[in-house]
Image (tube, rainbow, N blue to C red; front, side, top):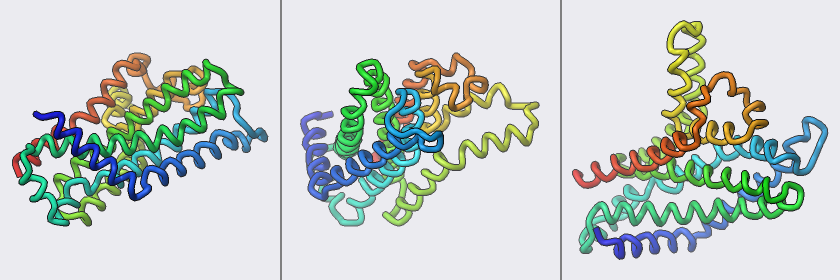
Length: 272
């Protein structure tokens, strides 16, 4: 595997995303929504402005879970199938590069664009929070931003996998939206429905660990268990066992969600 060729492909993919102002648009969306939620999240309790770091992260977790997976899926769903429809995939494969190098180059370029846009959006919020929250608050905020980036990379990996498996862009975009609905909106409802249907008589001990099958839930638990007040706000302290709240276990699960879809995409791309 030639890393020089991978970086060249990644740099080209990154420059292409920068030219169409995609990074600027996503950064602007993140900044606006983050500022609004962080400063006005306590309006229902009759208070405005930045409050504790726990309250700020609790407010931003919902934004990240809804917005970042959707942006990552829309960014990567046509990475391969789009090149195939435009006829440029055959030209790329004619170059002295392997399919693995091509896939990794595309993924790394998209990951750089997604990470830069997220960092730009969150950086302004972090700068504004420095005075009211101090270094301690920024430390926890940095952990939240890092976990948000891992969540984005996990869904970007899923998007690239769909792009390899789908036969055309229309199917790839439909699958991407369906995947967003499944992981962000439906998965938890299915688990809760099964738990209620069984009256808690079966599967109760297994239920918390099934949350690892959803990267959005892994992200939620990772941030919920990092701060005591956030854990109380979400009410998961009594549902999720302390062993599942291990940052190393959750970080490993998130990395698995990044590596596994890419591995499947590589296997399918090589055999096609």
